[in-house]
Length: 79
Image: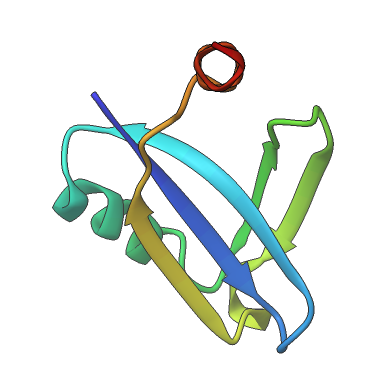
């Protein structure tokens, strides 16, 4: 499974981001298309619950996400 970052932009300053796990970019795009013009709900990485109507979103961006283990990066920087 790959991890994808999906960002829903409402205007230039307001957005909500979620992470999904699917096999490919194509499947991520198909999922987002299937959710078009309906309510979706999810809990983000901070534990905050969101409900949004995808028809109210101006822009949706999807990109593959590569998590960085920050504790390893911090440890390497200290050495």
